[in-house]
Image 1: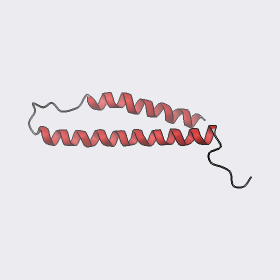
Image 2: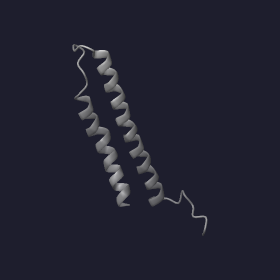
Image 3: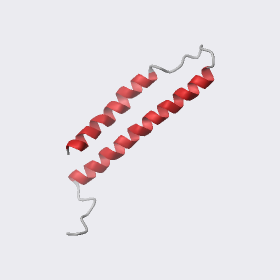
Image 4: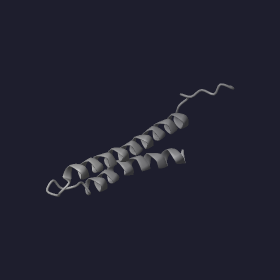
Length: 76
C-alpha cells in the first residue's frame, strides 16, 4: 500500500509540478532557430508526460492489486 501511495503522489507531482517547470522553459517566439528549439521542447514535454502516464498506470495497477480481487490467485 505504501508503494501505491508513493506512486500516486509521484504521479501528481510529476504531472502538475513538473508540467509547470517544463512550461517555464518553453522557447520564446522571438528567438532565432525557434522552430528547432520548439520541436526539441515539444519532444521533451511529450517524453515527460509519458513518464507521468507510466506512473498513472502503476498507481492504478497497484490499487487494483491492493483494494480489489481483480487479479485472482489461481492457486486458491
